Image 1 (cartoon, rainbow, N blue to C red):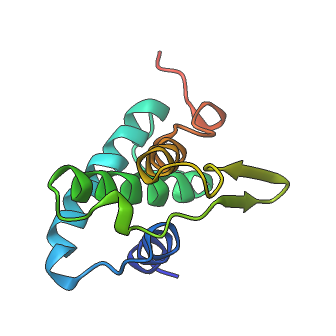
Image 2: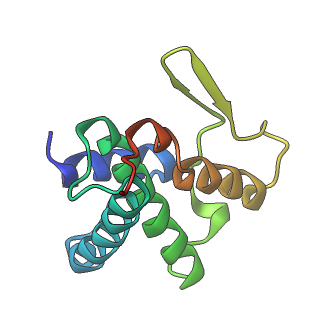
Length: 125
């Protein structure tokens, strides 16, 4: 699966929306920004294979946040899942009673979190 396919899948699962082709240049910029952040945080010249999912999630989070900030998307119109399960870990974004903004905020916190970066960090000498 390519980076763009994985990103499209994450955005679709988290929001119910597809990424239009007109946003591909924006996606490239956001992906480069997330990649630079991960490379800086780990002191590496490329993103380690084990952090590819973090790169995809952070790019998706930045894209969703930008769409919401630009008022292109409305939090009430997004189909944010109630829970996400990865392996033996489950993340709860709030029950049905939680308002849309709170669920979107929890989802963005999850996507933008710097997970597992310390495992791949190299020391600078």
